[in-house]
Image (cartoon, rainbow, N blue to C red; front, top):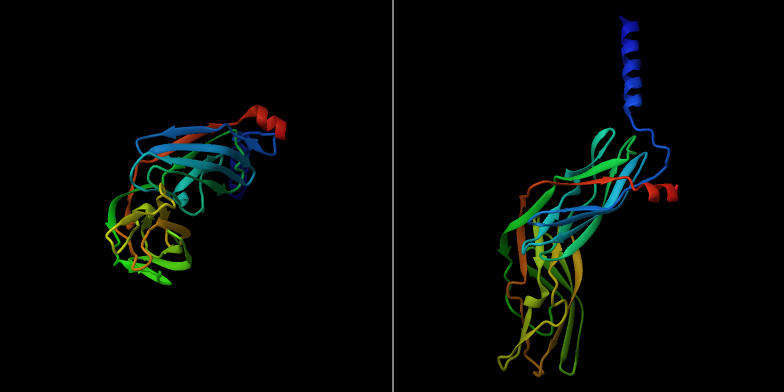
Length: 260
C-alpha cells in the first residue's frame, strides 16, 4: 500500500510539472490592456511576471460623481497555481478623477504568458453623509475638528488682499472621507463671500488615517472680521459592493525578448 501511495504522489507531481508552461525568460512583460463599464475605465499597464510574483499598475478613471474604492486584498492575478490575491492598500478614486496603484500578487511558480487581473474588490460610495461645522473667525484656529476630520494649521499669512491658509487635513473615520476645498468660502463683515482659489477642481478622498496638505487662498478687501464658512465641504461615504470586472493581458513577446 505504501508503495502505491509513493507512486501516486510522484505521478501527481510529474503531471503537475508537465502541465505547466515552460518559459525560458526570467521576466515576462505583458501588453497593456483595459476594460470599462458605467463606473469607469480600468487600465492595466506595465504588468510583469516572475517566478515569485505578478504585478502591474492599475489606472482607474472614475466616470461618476461618487467616490470609487478598490480593495486589492479582494483582487487577484491568475497564475499557474490559481488565483493569487494582493495585500496592497486601498485605491480611492474621487469623483470624475483618475488615480493609479501598483497591484502586486506574490506566490510560487507565478510566471506565465497570460494572466488576468480580477477586480473583485470594487466599491462605490452611493450613500453620503455631510460633516457639518460652525463658521471659523480669522485668525484661523490651530486645530479644527469637523465630524471625523481633524484639521491642523500648517501656516497662514495675509498680503494685501490675499489671505493664505494651509491645513493638514486628516480623516479618522471608518468609511471613506471626502473633502471639496472649493466649497469652503470666506465671508467679510460687509457681506461679501469669496471662493477658494486653491485646489478649485479637486475632490480629496481619504481612507482611515490618510492626511493631505490643503491650501486656501482668498481675495478680500476687508482688513478684519473675516469668517471661514466650511459649508458642505466635508462628507463621508459608505461603501457598497459594485460589479466585478476583469482585465486580461498576454505576453508582449518583442518586449520580453528585448529585455531578457
